[in-house]
Every structure is written in C-alpha cells, then in structure tokens.
Image 1: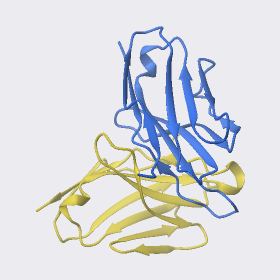
Image 2 (image 1 turned 180 degrees about the vertical axis):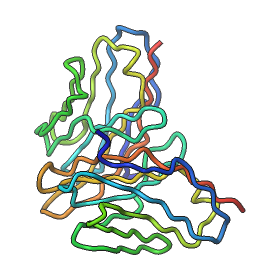
Image 3 (image 1 turned 45 degrees about the vertical axis):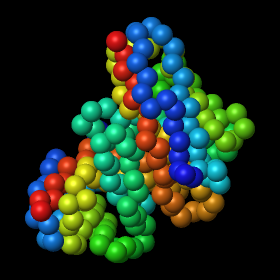
Image 4 (image 1 turned 90 degrees about the horizontal axis):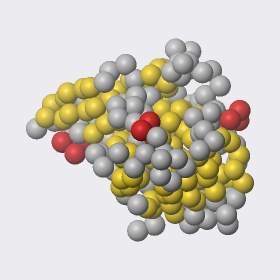
Length: 116
Length: 114
C-alpha cells in the first residue's frame, strides 16, 4: 500500500497529557498537510510543509501545537497539555506540487484523538 | 466566515438515478476545486477536480460543473450506485495566492437506495 499512512489510528489520553501523531506521506510527494475534523464539520487546515519547510500555520494552531517534517519525509504533530477541545480527527494529506496548476491532496485515514 | 458552503446536509436518491450535489463559495481568489468522498472511519478519498479555467470536467460516472460568475459548483453522479452512499465534501483552494491549502464545505451525506 503506497497511500498516506497515519499512526496511531486512535489515541485516548487524559486532559493535560502530551500526544504525538505521525504521518507518512506518499513517497514522491513534496507537500504534506495537516487538517483537523470535528463531528459534522469538514476538515479544517492546520499547517503544511513543502519538503522540510513549514510554510504556513493556521491561527487554529495554538502554541500548544507543533509540527515537524525533519527530513522532508514523515511528519509529526504534537499537542502539549491537551484540552477537551482538542478531541477531533487529525488528518494528514500529501501532494506533489511542481507548478502553477492544482494537484489533488491524498488523505490518510486519520488519528482520532479522545481527551478524557 | 464560511467560505465554502454545502447547503444540503443530506440527499437520498434511488439506485440508477442521478445524484446532484451542490456547493457555493465566496472567495473569488479560489481557482481550484475538488470533491472528496468519505466513508466512516476512513479519510477523504479524492474523486474529481476542476480548475477555474474550465467549466466542466468528467471522469466516468462523475462530472463536476463550475459556474464562476455564480461562485457555484456541482457534482453529478450518474448512475448512482449503493456503494456511492457516503459523505461528500466540496473543497477549494487559491493556488496562486495561498498555496494549495484546502477550504472544505460541511459535507452532504448521500444515501443511495437499492
């Protein structure tokens, strides 16, 4: 399977704990995106990388959130001091962007975070 | 401010008939539009896209129409099959102005009855 892979699929933790999610994009893709989806809503953009450079962060991404893509391959999203409102599905997507035309993003199956 | 809206939260259609899903947007900078399908416990799956320089794009049973003056796009599925039952999301991006980050609508749940 050469699709986008996310781990873990489900994370349950107590409020105040730190959590880290991992995303492995499609290998030849240079862009990697993180989105968050809550029940009944569409995904919302959080941040994206071009290779290892983090190019944009949404204002949804508070100081408790940090994302990395150290070698331009896999990415991690860390949430520190989790809060109830962080409960959501965290989706990763990747695409190959090489010009001025749009390319579709391909999504992983997400990590569902539940805060107790 | 919801820049992409799907005003119909649900749609029920008979197998074999046409499903028409609608989407409206407000940001005139959007120049690339996509439709995704999502099954429970899975990530969104890309279906079809259209650039703002076109008004129609077809791929098998799926056709997307774009009306730039009305800031409206639609997805036609013909013929509808039971396996099409899922939540469909419209998404848009402003490639030249803001990279390719996607702004999604709230989704339309489609039920295809056999």
